[in-house]
Each structure stands twice: as C-alpha cells, then as structure tokens.
Figure 1 (spheres, rainbow, N blue to C red):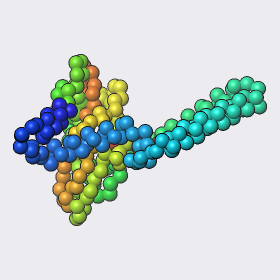
Figure 2 (tube, helix red, strand yellow):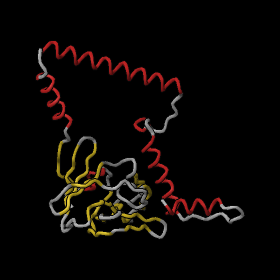
Figure 3 (tube, one colour):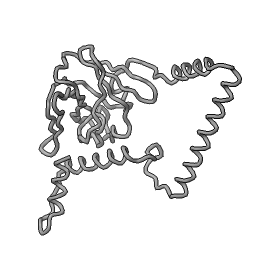
Length: 237
C-alpha cells in the first residue's frame, strides 16, 4: 500500500518527470483497484453496475416487503404446528442441505482450468513478505506468514489467459494438524488467489498463497482445501 501511494506521489509531483511503471507495478495497481471495488460494491454479484436513486429505493422497498412476507410465513408456521419444534427441525434440515459437499481432488481440478498444471513447491515462514522491489506485507506483532509456493504451468500448445482473481474460491490451510486458516486477500500480482495474466504455451509462472498464523505455529506439514460453488475440495498436495 505504501509503495502504491509513493508511486502516486511521484507521478503527480509538480514539475517532476512522469514515472514509468513496470508491468508488475501496473498490475499491482489494477489488483488493488479491483480488490477495493469488489470489497465495497454492494452490487458485486451483478458485476459493475450503476444504480439510480429510484432503483435503490425500489430495491429497499422490495427488501422490506420480502422481510414482512417472511415474518408472516414464520408466524403462520408456528400457529399451524402449535410449537417451535417444527421450525427448529426445518432450520437444521436447511443447514444440512447448504453444507458444502466434500471431495478430494488435485489443485488444478479445484481451480478449473483445463491444461493448467499446478504443482506445490514447498512452504516457508516470513514475518515480512516482499514481492519484487515494489510491494511488501507485514504479518504484524505476534504473527508470521506461512507462505505456500506453487508453479502454474501451461501444458497446452497455445497461450492461456488465466484469471484467478474473479474465478476463485476460498483457500484454507491447516498446519501440522492444527487450526484451519483462510488465505490472505492480498494485492499481490503473483498470488494463487489474485493472479491475472497470460501464460505462454509450455511456460510456467510461480505464485504463492499467504496465511497469517501465530508465530508459534508449527508448519512441518500442511493440509489444504478450496471451497467453490458449495463444494469443499480437499487438496492432495
């Protein structure tokens, strides 16, 4: 973040020559902007949209009517059964129905790109993770980053456009059989959950996943999962 602000200052300084950014720095700014939009855009499921005031009021009114109808339905159910046990059982059944199914697959299968090979290249722990000379992330006091390294390889005979920023899932990892952690949503250009770019035929790109864990966490082994489309994929690394 500090590097992005510094770059912006250099670019807008009075009487200063325009700063020529590298491809990595430009992609970093793109990732930052896309991440910020996706985090604060309440219309994210519909993509980037422009809602008028009338449309917003209409949606608010519709939401209020839906809440009223739902409340009426619950009251009716309670009256028909004469007790709340029926509703409780229905809630438990709904929770069971929405619980993700589980299966064991390769990481390439979980990501869903035909012809893209994903190989695990090991794990390191770092209190500060740096990407090139233009971006760094601090784990903070009492924490460290468990950095999982991967190599994306295009095994086809044609160039492949890969978008793991929008076409992704929830990456989680547990270390030495302990607590499960979710991967950091970072602005890194070369991260498994943010990479966007073209991998030439027969070429490879190195990426990482960062998990913020307490400093005393033992990282001798790792188990990983990817949850996508209500399916929790256990990953065979």
